[in-house]
Amino acid sequence: MSTSQERSVVLVTGASSGIGEACAELLSARGHTVYGTSRQARAGQPARYAMLELDVTQEDSVRRAVATVLEREGRVDGVVNNAGHALAGALEDTSVEEAWKQLDTNVLGVLRVCRAVLPGMRERRSGRIINIGSLGGVVGLPFQGFYSASKFALEGLTESLRQELEPFGIQAALVQPGDVRTRLTDNRVRAAGSGEGSAYHAAFETVLGIIEKEEREGVPPEDVARCVLSLMEAPSMPVRVSVGKLAQRAAVVAKTVLPAKTFEGVLMSMYGLKKRG
Image 1 (cartoon, one colour):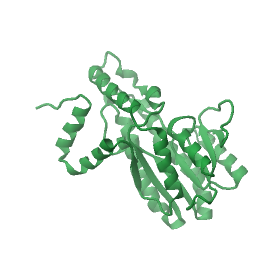
Image 2 (spheres, rainbow, N blue to C red):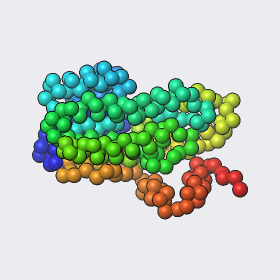
Image 3 (cartoon, rainbow, N blue to C red):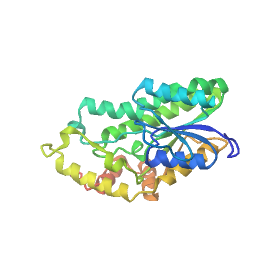
Image 4 (tube, rainbow, N blue to C red):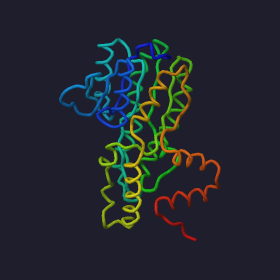
């Protein structure tokens, strides 16, 4: 898998659109054997790669999809854990059930896929796992609390995973996209309690409007796909790599340099919020 000349078998979750689809297209165009997945089977198949039904929140669904790849190809060399769900709303307006769905998809979904592919990778002492995180997993975003929480969790999960897999010759890395133009913007779920009766309603609408505008003006998903391809084919993968507009990637660096309250004030002002005093 260290060179583009080696044909790798790669599983890409959430490949029906956006980042996942771009990754599946580019990896297959490069000559890798790609299996994309989505929660629901769709009519027809892409010309370059196969699509499988896989719901990362369902253990049996994950195991069936991975078993299909193993039956057809005999191995899984790489995984791009991209399937995700986005929830918006004030934390107070978010139910435990809504929060759980967010974490179940974005964190435990990654765990389920890893558990399904790692036995074979350990046996071959080779493999690559690329988790699609977010710059929102480095900087907590207003009214995106549980989305950020899920991506913060993915940061720690990936760091731990790398250390555990090192003795088996398996590598893991995290890709941190900033704003990307995908259907995630239109598919975002609002917490049920975030309507007009919420104490946070006005601020929430202001912030979400800014977030959605920036997403629609974000980088194309192909930028993330090129990053994933380079990781899949590199001799060694770094812990993490960020993708997106320079200003957004710089904000992550600014968090480590500026005093915490100063950075918080700058971030709030970016989203039309004001600090008291």
